[in-house]
Amino acid sequence: MADLPYVLLSCAASVDGYIDDASEERLLLSNDEDFDRVDDVRATCDAILVGANTIRRDNPRLLVRSEARRRARVAAGRSESPVKVTISGTGDLSPEAKFFTTGAMDKLVYCDGGSVHKAADRLADVATVLNGGQPLELKRVLADLAERGVRRLMVEGGSTLHTQFLRAGLADELHLVIAPFLVGEPAAPRFAGPGPFPQNAGNRMRLAETRQIGDCVLLRYLPGEGARS
Image 1 (cartoon, helix red, strand yellow):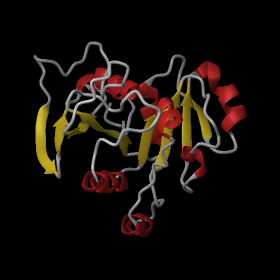
Image 2 (cartoon, helix red, strand yellow):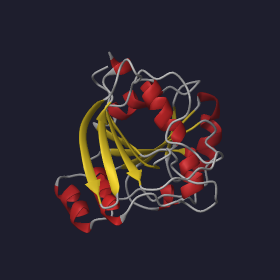
Image 3 (cartoon, one colour):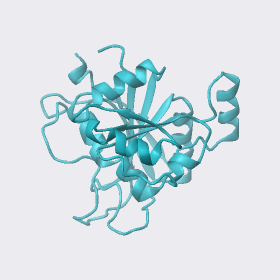
């Protein structure tokens, strides 16, 4: 399905594969240099997608931080930061979350078809609530984003979304930053959950780049077309 957006997964994980610990506070895995790299990648994208649990747990703003990059986007006729997108089975999100209250760009919420009206009652003043299918279908969401002009989509987690995109073969590129420590907490979330993946021992991802970023390392993989073919 060539008309779908180019999908880039972005994640930082510990050496043992965790993207957070089990505490209530967000675990910072990366460093300032890598945060700036992520900001640079954000500035190249048309939309940023995070899961509903990421909004609830981390309350992210999802904005381009660099003033120079924001100016460059505006000069090119784009919004200062990419469109914000989330996927939620229930639409049970607070309209006071920073996802909704920061930035003048569009905010899109894709819900399970059975929850659209309930979510719209809660979020209609702060976002556009859309039917993502019943059950939710990633390809349907991606196709709708493409119709809205999204050509390059950055997925910033969490674990459930990364797992779904990889299992469906819908990830074109993966940026995985490894932090130089271990978490070791079984209750903490990992980069990807269990399940059958097309990117397996018989179908290895292509390593396109390795880069040292301070005490971290970036691994840039190209997972392949997978389910798009």
